[in-house]
Every structure is written in structure tokens, then in C-alpha cells.
Amino acid sequence: MTRKFRLFPLGTLLAGVFLAVTLLAVPAAHAVKANELVKIDSASIDPPLKAGGSSTLKIAATVIPDWHINSDKPFSEDYIPTKLEVSGPVSVTPGAIKYPPAETITLDPAAGGDKIAVFGGDLKFEVPLKADADFAPKPGDELKVTIDYQGCNNNECLRPASVSTTVALAAPGAAAGAIEGVAAGGAKGRGVGGGDDAGGAIEHIFLNHGWLLGFLAVFLGGLALNLTPCVYPLIGVTIAYFGNQGGTHRRVMYLAMVFVLGIALMFSSVGVAVAMSGGLFGAAMQNPFVLVALATVLLALAASSFGLFVLQPPQWMLQRAGAAHPGYAGAFLMGLGMGVVAAPCIGPIVLGLLLMVEKSGSPFFGFALFFTLALGLGVPYIGLAMAAGHIRRLPRSGEWLAWVEHLFGFVLVGLALYFLDPVVPNNLMTRILPYYAAGVGIYLGFISREGRSWRPFLLMRSAIGVVAVAALAFMLYPRQAPEKLRFEPFNAKALASATEARKPVLIDFSADWCIPCREMEHSTFIDPSVVTEAKRFVRMKANLTAQDKKTAELTSKYEIQGVPTTMLIDSAGKVAQRKVGYIGPQEMLTDLQHVD
Image 1 (cartoon, rainbow, N blue to C red):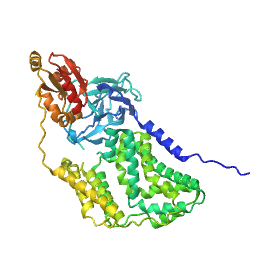
Image 2 (cartoon, helix red, strand yellow):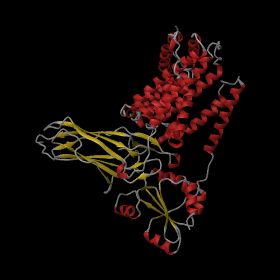
Image 3 (cartoon, rainbow, N blue to C red):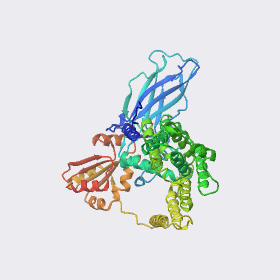
Image 4 (cartoon, rainbow, N blue to C red):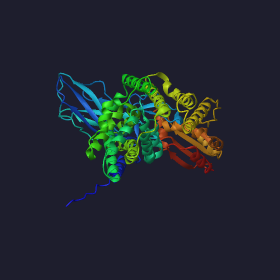
């Protein structure tokens, strides 16, 4: 008697796994006070410190999700750097502090487009300790560890604050005191310049348009990777493999799904590994020598795309792949192998995604992101597998594939320029990239010889050229600077005079280190409608940059928890509205119109 088994629908399995890891990857957001932004999880001395000996103080801290704090070297004097301090008996001398690797984020063009180095997620600090020869700790002797920081999210910045804990010296060190969170009181040092971010457009989509559109963009990026010079030759191998498989269409479809699952697991394992690297990947990306080496590799790969040399899988590998073992195990192994073969071309493209994963520190997010990318790369193969018996040969690559290879070559050059940006002063590379992109579009649209013989492709590339010309004209067109809303420095007497004159008042509480404040300066406060409506207000700006007595009095009197804080006072002298965080032009206009 023959027993028939139904194979569990792998499409349902793939969808279920993807949905589960995506939901697990989404962090929860909640309101936070300045002294709750950072938590010291542990502090220990390993090995125990002995007289005349050396050891290391290890501190683990966490920045809550969706927030970041400035790094110890945030690139600009406008930003307050994170500072770790260790104090204790004179018989113990702390050495140079090893800070965690920083992430470089590029601010929105509305905030000036500058770069800033920040810390986020799990943080590890190390401090070498040296004990004097007369070191003899008594019960109660301890080191005090304090982290001074200033944090922001995408909407607001909080005032500087600090957290602290203690570590016992008389016993093998574990954190000995309750962690204290205190708002920063005395004057803090301002940021000093320092030593990168490649999240790029995909990260921007995740941050500004949500997870659904973010994962959709990653999926579409996976589809596009099929046109890279390393992957395209594998399409023929895949068709040959599935064409040699026997059985029904359903069996071939299941084989193709197992093949795609192999690709997905190969990519996902990379994402999980980077997420669990503990910052090693990000630390490497802070090293100028690594960035120069990476840019050199990208330029070499670009040279291959331009035809200076051929980069494709070895012929023996293609032949063995086409003759892979039949059955589900063979399909799965072939999918794993495809991820390895494709790596030379698609590796540079997914580097930005790896940096996103390393920044998040979440294995679930790493799995979900690269699982989605692999699905985009692999889904076309399900259709190809189903049609393998009917496809005798692939369409000739010809001019259109040469044009696509040139496009990827220019993309690789652009990536090389981007990675060189931290090495070159004044963000020169970032500034020229938009013009570079427009020039590439014009070349590929009108000058390149490839892709002219096939009319639909010619129309498509011509459209790209037209868009590039329009973009270049827009960038080069001289535009008059928009009128900015002018503010007077905050003055209590001027506020009282405005109340006596029965005039409404607009007060903008801001700081030089506040990123959303800069965004409002470059967007909300130059909007023509906002500027016109606000002219009937007495406008004052309270700058809370300096951590001094005056700032402390203002923040206490007006209960300022974070900046920007926008306060509207009506003509009767009553606070009509108080909002913390970024306010867009339309919202600001509505708020102004509602104040008498």
C-alpha cells in the first residue's frame, strides 16, 4: 500500500516566519524624561583589583529604543558630547576611557544636512584601572561611575542629564549602588570635533514612512539585485536545474520554494550575525583605513561593471550548480550556494542594510530585513522554475544588460564617494553626490551607446535622461532665500510689555544642540504663511544652550522638559498652548490662527 504525504505549504511557512520576525523587530515607543533616557545595566571590575596591579572597569548601559545620545566626539562644537567619569580613592587611577563605536547619522536637509556621531542601543564602556602599591580597600570603598549625556529622537531633544552607579572595591566588583538619574546641573563641556552612516534611503524610509514601506523597499531592492552581473548568469543555471527535475508542477513549485528558503536563510544568518557582533561591524566602519579599503573595492567592482575585466562565477561552479543533486535537499543547498556566489556583486549594495542592523542590535530585525531582501531576490525564481520546461533560452543580454551593468557601476562609484566622505574634509563628497547622480542620469539617458536598438528600452532610458536634466536644472537654478521669521532674545520685561499692550506672544525655547530646532528653523519658520501670520505676535527666542543659572531658572519657571518647546500666549496674557517637539508649517499655522 502506498501512503501519500502532502507537503506543508512552504509559502505559508515563509509568510508566517516573516510576519513573526517583523512583529518582533518593531520596538515599543514611550514617553521619557531626560534622566530616564540612559540606564546603566551593570558595572564590574574584572579581574579584581589588587595592590600594585591593573584591571579593567567594564560598564554596560542602554539607551532606550528610538532615542540616541551624542557620542564622545559628535563632530561639532554645537553638540554636547557624552562623557564618562570615574571617581574614587586616590590609590586607584583610571586610564583612558574606551567608548563604544559611534553611529554617524546624516541630518535631514531641513536641519542643514550635517552629520553627527551618536550612540544608541546597548553601550559598552571600558576603563583601565591601576592600583597603587598601598592600595588596601576597606568595606564601603567604591568607585563612582557617571555618564553625562544629552539625547534626542526624531521629534525633540531633552536637556543634558546624567546617570551614575557605584562599584565596590573591597569585593569582586558588581554594581553596588542604586543607579541614580539626575538632570545635569553645572556647566557641561561643549562638543569637540571627532572622527559613518550608510543607511541611506532605506533607513530614511523606515524612519519616516514606517515598517511596511521600509520592508517593501527592501523587497524591491532584492528584485533589482537580479540584474547585477554576478546574479544574472545564475538565472540560466536555475532554469537548467529545475528543467531537469521530474514530477508535477506542484512539486517543482515546492522545490523552488525550498530553493528560495535556502537563499533567505543564507542572507538572514548574515543579518543575525551582524546584529550580535556587539558593535564590531560599526567600529570597523569608523576606521578611515577600512573606509578607504572599502572604497577601493567598490571602485574595482565598478571597473568590472564598465567592462575593464569580467567578474562572474567560475565555470566549474556554474556547471556543478546545474548538475546539483535532485530533491528538496539539493534545492535547499543550491539556494545556500547562490547567496555565496552572488556575494561579490551584491555585497556592496547591502552594506547599508548591514549598518542598519548593527545599529539596531536586534537579531530579530536583522533576520527580518535580510529575509525580506532574499525573498525579493528569490521570488522570480519560483516563476522561472515553473516555466523551466518551456524556456529554451534566456533573452539575449545584449545592449540592455550592458546598460544595466553600467548603471550598477555608477552606483558603486557613488557608494565609494559616500564612504570616502568622512575621510575628506567639509563633507565634500556628500555635497557633490547629487550633481554626480544627475550627471550619471544624463549620460545613461542620452550619451551611452547601449540600449538604443530596442525601442521600449530607448524610451525608458530617455525618460531617465529627461528627469536627470530637470534635476540638474533645479539644483543649478538660482533661488532667492525665503524670508525667515525673526525673533528677539527672550526678555521678561518685553513679555510684560506685550501683555500690557494686549499683544499675543510666540516664545520659541530652543538650543544650539537641538536637531529638531534646526529643522524648524529651516522649514517651519521660513514658510510664507507662518511668517505672515506670526507677524502679529511678539516673537521671542529663549536659547537654552548654556547650562547656567539663567537657563535653569527659565526651564524651571516655564516647566521646559525638552526642546523645541513652543509657547503661545494670547492677548490676555494667558498661555494658550504649549507644545514640545518639532512642529511642521501647517500645524504651526493652525496654532497661530487659534490664538487671539
